[in-house]
Image (cartoon, rainbow, N blue to C red; front, side, top):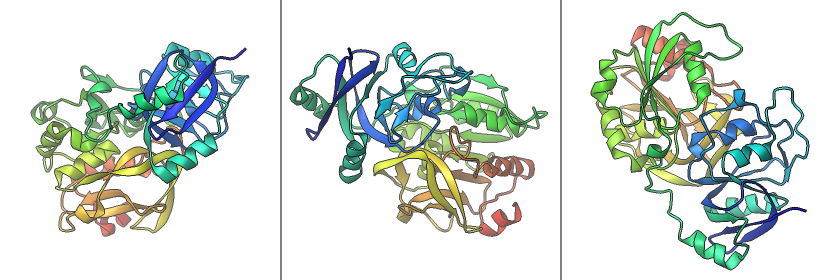
Length: 381
Protein backbone atom coordinates (compact mmCIF):
# COMPACT_ATOMS: atom_id res chain seq x y z
CA UNK A 1 0.00 0.00 0.00
CA UNK A 2 1.51 3.31 -1.08
CA UNK A 3 1.19 6.69 0.57
CA UNK A 4 -0.31 9.59 -1.40
CA UNK A 5 1.52 12.85 -2.13
CA UNK A 6 0.22 15.98 -3.85
CA UNK A 7 2.22 18.64 -5.71
CA UNK A 8 0.46 21.98 -6.20
CA UNK A 9 1.76 25.00 -8.12
CA UNK A 10 0.95 28.62 -7.42
CA UNK A 11 -1.35 28.85 -10.47
CA UNK A 12 -3.57 26.03 -9.20
CA UNK A 13 -2.11 23.25 -11.33
CA UNK A 14 -1.73 20.13 -9.21
CA UNK A 15 -0.60 16.52 -9.45
CA UNK A 16 -1.48 13.52 -7.30
CA UNK A 17 1.00 10.65 -7.01
CA UNK A 18 2.79 8.19 -4.76
CA UNK A 19 5.03 9.44 -1.97
CA UNK A 20 8.56 8.21 -1.34
CA UNK A 21 11.48 9.47 0.66
CA UNK A 22 10.59 11.52 3.72
CA UNK A 23 7.10 12.36 4.94
CA UNK A 24 5.92 15.91 5.47
CA UNK A 25 5.49 19.09 3.48
CA UNK A 26 8.12 20.94 1.44
CA UNK A 27 8.12 24.10 -0.64
CA UNK A 28 10.25 25.67 -3.34
CA UNK A 29 10.53 26.81 -6.92
CA UNK A 30 9.59 23.92 -9.23
CA UNK A 31 12.03 23.36 -12.10
CA UNK A 32 13.14 20.45 -14.31
CA UNK A 33 16.42 18.75 -15.24
CA UNK A 34 16.94 17.02 -18.60
CA UNK A 35 19.85 14.75 -17.61
CA UNK A 36 19.39 11.06 -18.42
CA UNK A 37 21.82 9.95 -15.72
CA UNK A 38 23.72 11.26 -12.72
CA UNK A 39 20.82 11.74 -10.32
CA UNK A 40 23.09 11.33 -7.21
CA UNK A 41 25.25 14.22 -8.44
CA UNK A 42 22.17 16.26 -9.32
CA UNK A 43 20.62 15.66 -5.90
CA UNK A 44 23.76 16.82 -4.08
CA UNK A 45 24.33 20.00 -6.15
CA UNK A 46 24.00 22.99 -3.75
CA UNK A 47 22.75 25.18 -6.60
CA UNK A 48 19.30 23.58 -6.14
CA UNK A 49 18.84 25.27 -2.76
CA UNK A 50 15.28 26.62 -2.52
CA UNK A 51 14.00 24.45 -5.37
CA UNK A 52 12.04 21.25 -6.05
CA UNK A 53 13.33 19.28 -9.01
CA UNK A 54 11.52 17.24 -11.65
CA UNK A 55 13.59 14.80 -13.74
CA UNK A 56 12.49 14.51 -17.37
CA UNK A 57 14.03 11.04 -17.75
CA UNK A 58 11.22 8.66 -16.73
CA UNK A 59 13.02 6.03 -14.60
CA UNK A 60 15.17 7.24 -11.71
CA UNK A 61 16.94 5.26 -8.97
CA UNK A 62 17.92 2.14 -10.90
CA UNK A 63 21.56 2.17 -9.77
CA UNK A 64 21.00 3.34 -6.22
CA UNK A 65 23.17 5.86 -4.39
CA UNK A 66 26.96 5.76 -4.02
CA UNK A 67 28.60 8.24 -1.66
CA UNK A 68 31.53 8.59 -4.08
CA UNK A 69 29.18 10.38 -6.47
CA UNK A 70 28.23 13.16 -4.06
CA UNK A 71 28.89 16.73 -5.19
CA UNK A 72 28.54 18.27 -1.73
CA UNK A 73 28.05 17.32 1.91
CA UNK A 74 24.28 16.83 1.64
CA UNK A 75 21.10 17.43 -0.38
CA UNK A 76 19.99 21.07 -0.49
CA UNK A 77 16.87 20.80 -2.68
CA UNK A 78 13.58 20.25 -0.86
CA UNK A 79 11.53 18.04 -3.18
CA UNK A 80 12.23 15.39 -5.84
CA UNK A 81 9.74 14.64 -8.62
CA UNK A 82 9.97 11.61 -10.94
CA UNK A 83 7.78 9.65 -13.30
CA UNK A 84 8.83 6.31 -11.83
CA UNK A 85 11.14 5.41 -8.96
CA UNK A 86 12.97 2.20 -9.75
CA UNK A 87 11.99 -0.72 -7.52
CA UNK A 88 15.46 -2.23 -8.02
CA UNK A 89 18.83 -0.61 -7.23
CA UNK A 90 21.46 -2.66 -9.08
CA UNK A 91 25.04 -1.41 -8.75
CA UNK A 92 28.01 -2.85 -6.85
CA UNK A 93 28.91 0.68 -5.69
CA UNK A 94 25.46 1.42 -4.28
CA UNK A 95 25.21 1.98 -0.55
CA UNK A 96 21.44 2.50 -0.37
CA UNK A 97 18.36 2.99 -2.51
CA UNK A 98 17.06 6.36 -3.68
CA UNK A 99 14.11 6.03 -1.29
CA UNK A 100 16.40 5.36 1.68
CA UNK A 101 18.67 8.22 0.72
CA UNK A 102 15.88 10.78 0.50
CA UNK A 103 14.57 9.62 3.87
CA UNK A 104 18.01 10.16 5.41
CA UNK A 105 18.20 13.63 3.84
CA UNK A 106 14.67 14.64 4.89
CA UNK A 107 13.59 15.18 1.27
CA UNK A 108 10.03 14.48 0.13
CA UNK A 109 9.62 12.65 -3.18
CA UNK A 110 6.67 12.04 -5.46
CA UNK A 111 6.36 9.52 -8.30
CA UNK A 112 3.63 8.33 -10.61
CA UNK A 113 2.67 11.76 -11.94
CA UNK A 114 2.71 12.94 -15.55
CA UNK A 115 6.14 14.58 -15.52
CA UNK A 116 5.85 15.35 -19.25
CA UNK A 117 2.76 17.44 -18.55
CA UNK A 118 4.50 19.19 -15.65
CA UNK A 119 7.60 20.02 -17.71
CA UNK A 120 5.55 21.31 -20.66
CA UNK A 121 3.59 23.49 -18.25
CA UNK A 122 6.80 24.96 -16.79
CA UNK A 123 8.22 25.56 -20.27
CA UNK A 124 5.07 27.43 -21.29
CA UNK A 125 4.37 29.29 -18.03
CA UNK A 126 7.82 29.49 -16.48
CA UNK A 127 9.27 28.11 -13.26
CA UNK A 128 6.88 28.71 -10.40
CA UNK A 129 6.48 28.21 -6.70
CA UNK A 130 5.04 24.95 -5.46
CA UNK A 131 4.28 22.85 -2.39
CA UNK A 132 4.75 19.08 -2.16
CA UNK A 133 2.97 17.36 0.71
CA UNK A 134 2.16 13.96 2.14
CA UNK A 135 0.11 15.42 5.03
CA UNK A 136 -2.09 18.07 3.42
CA UNK A 137 -3.68 16.53 0.34
CA UNK A 138 -6.05 19.42 -0.48
CA UNK A 139 -4.91 21.05 -3.76
CA UNK A 140 -6.66 24.34 -2.96
CA UNK A 141 -4.93 24.59 0.42
CA UNK A 142 -1.53 23.76 -1.08
CA UNK A 143 -2.02 26.31 -3.86
CA UNK A 144 -2.56 29.07 -1.31
CA UNK A 145 0.57 27.99 0.52
CA UNK A 146 2.51 28.06 -2.77
CA UNK A 147 1.45 31.65 -3.42
CA UNK A 148 2.95 32.68 -0.08
CA UNK A 149 6.43 31.21 -0.77
CA UNK A 150 9.28 33.69 -1.16
CA UNK A 151 10.50 34.42 -4.67
CA UNK A 152 14.09 33.44 -5.48
CA UNK A 153 14.64 36.79 -7.19
CA UNK A 154 16.39 39.02 -4.69
CA UNK A 155 16.93 36.14 -2.26
CA UNK A 156 20.40 35.45 -0.84
CA UNK A 157 20.72 31.66 -0.84
CA UNK A 158 24.52 31.59 -0.83
CA UNK A 159 24.68 32.07 2.93
CA UNK A 160 22.67 28.85 3.34
CA UNK A 161 25.10 26.64 1.39
CA UNK A 162 28.60 28.11 1.83
CA UNK A 163 31.18 26.53 4.11
CA UNK A 164 31.53 27.87 7.64
CA UNK A 165 35.33 27.99 7.62
CA UNK A 166 38.23 27.55 5.18
CA UNK A 167 39.51 24.08 4.33
CA UNK A 168 42.03 22.45 1.99
CA UNK A 169 41.13 20.07 -0.83
CA UNK A 170 43.49 17.43 -2.23
CA UNK A 171 41.33 14.79 -3.97
CA UNK A 172 41.84 14.63 -7.75
CA UNK A 173 39.71 13.30 -10.60
CA UNK A 174 39.57 9.48 -10.50
CA UNK A 175 40.83 9.08 -14.06
CA UNK A 176 43.90 11.31 -13.54
CA UNK A 177 47.17 10.92 -11.70
CA UNK A 178 47.88 13.19 -8.72
CA UNK A 179 49.86 16.23 -9.85
CA UNK A 180 52.57 17.99 -7.88
CA UNK A 181 51.13 21.26 -6.60
CA UNK A 182 52.18 24.04 -8.96
CA UNK A 183 49.57 26.64 -8.07
CA UNK A 184 47.96 27.94 -4.92
CA UNK A 185 44.27 28.64 -5.62
CA UNK A 186 41.73 30.31 -3.37
CA UNK A 187 38.25 29.01 -4.27
CA UNK A 188 35.25 31.02 -3.10
CA UNK A 189 32.49 28.67 -1.98
CA UNK A 190 29.14 29.99 -3.14
CA UNK A 191 27.85 26.39 -3.23
CA UNK A 192 30.86 24.69 -4.79
CA UNK A 193 30.70 21.19 -6.29
CA UNK A 194 33.30 18.59 -5.39
CA UNK A 195 34.08 17.79 -9.02
CA UNK A 196 35.19 21.39 -9.53
CA UNK A 197 37.66 20.94 -6.69
CA UNK A 198 38.80 17.60 -8.11
CA UNK A 199 39.33 19.23 -11.51
CA UNK A 200 41.42 22.03 -10.02
CA UNK A 201 43.49 19.57 -7.98
CA UNK A 202 44.10 17.50 -11.11
CA UNK A 203 45.62 20.61 -12.71
CA UNK A 204 48.25 20.74 -9.99
CA UNK A 205 46.40 23.24 -7.81
CA UNK A 206 46.60 23.33 -4.05
CA UNK A 207 43.05 24.51 -3.36
CA UNK A 208 41.97 26.41 -0.27
CA UNK A 209 38.18 26.68 -0.15
CA UNK A 210 36.97 29.79 1.65
CA UNK A 211 33.50 30.93 2.77
CA UNK A 212 31.57 33.30 0.52
CA UNK A 213 31.99 36.08 3.08
CA UNK A 214 35.80 36.05 2.85
CA UNK A 215 37.17 39.55 2.24
CA UNK A 216 39.43 40.36 -0.68
CA UNK A 217 42.17 41.27 1.78
CA UNK A 218 42.00 37.88 3.51
CA UNK A 219 42.00 36.06 0.15
CA UNK A 220 45.07 37.98 -1.07
CA UNK A 221 46.81 37.36 2.27
CA UNK A 222 46.86 33.65 1.34
CA UNK A 223 49.17 34.58 -1.57
CA UNK A 224 47.18 32.72 -4.25
CA UNK A 225 48.30 32.27 -7.85
CA UNK A 226 44.64 32.43 -8.87
CA UNK A 227 41.13 33.04 -7.59
CA UNK A 228 38.25 30.70 -8.40
CA UNK A 229 34.58 31.77 -8.09
CA UNK A 230 32.22 28.82 -7.77
CA UNK A 231 28.71 27.92 -8.73
CA UNK A 232 25.87 28.51 -6.30
CA UNK A 233 22.14 29.10 -5.93
CA UNK A 234 19.93 32.12 -6.32
CA UNK A 235 20.08 35.66 -7.62
CA UNK A 236 23.54 37.26 -8.09
CA UNK A 237 22.04 40.69 -7.39
CA UNK A 238 21.11 39.46 -3.91
CA UNK A 239 24.79 39.31 -2.84
CA UNK A 240 26.11 42.88 -3.42
CA UNK A 241 28.57 42.49 -0.54
CA UNK A 242 30.22 39.58 -2.38
CA UNK A 243 30.31 41.55 -5.63
CA UNK A 244 32.05 44.40 -3.79
CA UNK A 245 34.77 42.11 -2.45
CA UNK A 246 35.35 40.37 -5.78
CA UNK A 247 35.68 43.76 -7.46
CA UNK A 248 38.72 44.41 -5.25
CA UNK A 249 40.39 41.28 -6.66
CA UNK A 250 40.09 42.32 -10.31
CA UNK A 251 43.56 42.98 -11.74
CA UNK A 252 45.29 41.54 -8.66
CA UNK A 253 45.19 37.84 -9.55
CA UNK A 254 43.98 35.63 -12.43
CA UNK A 255 40.28 34.83 -11.91
CA UNK A 256 38.09 32.00 -13.24
CA UNK A 257 34.36 31.94 -12.54
CA UNK A 258 31.68 29.29 -13.09
CA UNK A 259 27.88 29.68 -13.00
CA UNK A 260 27.04 32.06 -10.11
CA UNK A 261 30.72 33.03 -10.11
CA UNK A 262 30.30 34.01 -13.77
CA UNK A 263 27.29 36.15 -12.94
CA UNK A 264 29.06 37.81 -10.00
CA UNK A 265 32.01 38.61 -12.26
CA UNK A 266 29.59 40.14 -14.75
CA UNK A 267 28.18 42.42 -12.07
CA UNK A 268 31.66 43.53 -11.03
CA UNK A 269 32.18 44.78 -14.60
CA UNK A 270 28.90 46.70 -14.63
CA UNK A 271 26.76 44.10 -16.38
CA UNK A 272 23.18 43.39 -15.33
CA UNK A 273 21.52 40.03 -14.74
CA UNK A 274 17.99 38.76 -15.18
CA UNK A 275 15.91 35.70 -14.34
CA UNK A 276 15.38 33.13 -17.08
CA UNK A 277 11.90 31.83 -17.78
CA UNK A 278 12.67 28.28 -16.61
CA UNK A 279 16.44 28.21 -16.42
CA UNK A 280 19.00 25.81 -17.86
CA UNK A 281 19.21 22.52 -15.95
CA UNK A 282 20.69 19.38 -17.48
CA UNK A 283 23.79 17.78 -18.97
CA UNK A 284 22.88 18.16 -22.65
CA UNK A 285 22.89 21.93 -23.31
CA UNK A 286 24.51 22.98 -26.63
CA UNK A 287 26.97 25.87 -26.47
CA UNK A 288 29.01 27.43 -29.29
CA UNK A 289 32.61 28.30 -28.57
CA UNK A 290 33.01 31.44 -30.66
CA UNK A 291 36.78 31.33 -31.29
CA UNK A 292 36.60 27.96 -33.08
CA UNK A 293 32.86 27.79 -33.85
CA UNK A 294 32.87 24.34 -32.25
CA UNK A 295 29.80 23.06 -30.41
CA UNK A 296 30.20 21.84 -26.85
CA UNK A 297 27.57 19.77 -25.06
CA UNK A 298 27.54 21.13 -21.55
CA UNK A 299 26.19 20.59 -18.04
CA UNK A 300 24.22 23.53 -16.67
CA UNK A 301 22.24 24.46 -13.59
CA UNK A 302 21.20 28.08 -13.24
CA UNK A 303 18.09 30.25 -13.28
CA UNK A 304 19.72 33.65 -13.92
CA UNK A 305 21.85 35.00 -16.76
CA UNK A 306 23.92 38.02 -17.78
CA UNK A 307 22.16 40.48 -20.09
CA UNK A 308 24.06 40.55 -23.40
CA UNK A 309 23.14 44.20 -24.00
CA UNK A 310 24.81 45.22 -20.75
CA UNK A 311 28.28 43.93 -21.68
CA UNK A 312 30.90 46.64 -22.27
CA UNK A 313 32.66 45.59 -25.48
CA UNK A 314 35.66 47.71 -24.55
CA UNK A 315 36.30 45.49 -21.50
CA UNK A 316 34.76 42.10 -22.14
CA UNK A 317 34.49 39.77 -25.10
CA UNK A 318 31.75 37.14 -25.32
CA UNK A 319 33.40 33.75 -25.78
CA UNK A 320 30.48 31.28 -25.61
CA UNK A 321 26.79 31.41 -26.56
CA UNK A 322 23.89 29.06 -25.79
CA UNK A 323 22.47 27.66 -29.04
CA UNK A 324 18.98 27.13 -27.64
CA UNK A 325 18.20 30.69 -26.60
CA UNK A 326 21.36 32.70 -27.55
CA UNK A 327 22.06 33.66 -23.93
CA UNK A 328 25.62 34.51 -22.89
CA UNK A 329 27.52 31.40 -21.75
CA UNK A 330 30.98 32.87 -21.31
CA UNK A 331 33.07 36.01 -21.47
CA UNK A 332 36.68 37.06 -20.91
CA UNK A 333 38.37 40.35 -20.15
CA UNK A 334 40.26 41.71 -23.13
CA UNK A 335 43.27 43.00 -21.17
CA UNK A 336 43.29 41.20 -17.81
CA UNK A 337 43.56 37.48 -16.91
CA UNK A 338 39.87 37.08 -16.05
CA UNK A 339 37.32 34.76 -17.68
CA UNK A 340 34.17 32.87 -16.79
CA UNK A 341 31.50 30.53 -18.13
CA UNK A 342 27.86 30.09 -17.22
CA UNK A 343 27.97 26.29 -17.46
CA UNK A 344 29.84 23.52 -15.58
CA UNK A 345 33.05 22.34 -17.29
CA UNK A 346 33.69 19.90 -14.41
CA UNK A 347 30.63 17.97 -15.65
CA UNK A 348 29.38 16.09 -12.64
CA UNK A 349 27.34 14.55 -14.23
CA UNK A 350 27.81 15.22 -17.91
CA UNK A 351 30.16 15.33 -20.92
CA UNK A 352 33.80 16.38 -20.76
CA UNK A 353 33.75 18.73 -23.78
CA UNK A 354 34.67 21.77 -21.68
CA UNK A 355 37.40 20.49 -19.39
CA UNK A 356 39.94 22.47 -21.44
CA UNK A 357 38.81 25.51 -19.44
CA UNK A 358 40.70 24.22 -16.40
CA UNK A 359 43.81 23.93 -18.62
CA UNK A 360 43.22 27.54 -19.62
CA UNK A 361 43.03 28.66 -16.00
CA UNK A 362 46.31 26.88 -15.27
CA UNK A 363 47.95 28.55 -18.26
CA UNK A 364 46.65 31.93 -17.15
CA UNK A 365 48.17 31.44 -13.68
CA UNK A 366 51.41 30.23 -15.24
CA UNK A 367 51.82 33.23 -17.56
CA UNK A 368 49.76 35.94 -15.86
CA UNK A 369 48.46 36.86 -19.29
CA UNK A 370 44.82 37.13 -20.46
CA UNK A 371 43.36 34.52 -22.74
CA UNK A 372 40.24 36.52 -23.46
CA UNK A 373 40.46 37.60 -27.10
CA UNK A 374 39.55 35.10 -29.78
CA UNK A 375 43.08 35.33 -31.16
CA UNK A 376 44.54 34.46 -27.77
CA UNK A 377 42.00 31.72 -27.22
CA UNK A 378 42.85 30.09 -30.53
CA UNK A 379 46.54 30.24 -29.70
CA UNK A 380 46.00 28.17 -26.54
CA UNK A 381 44.31 25.24 -28.24
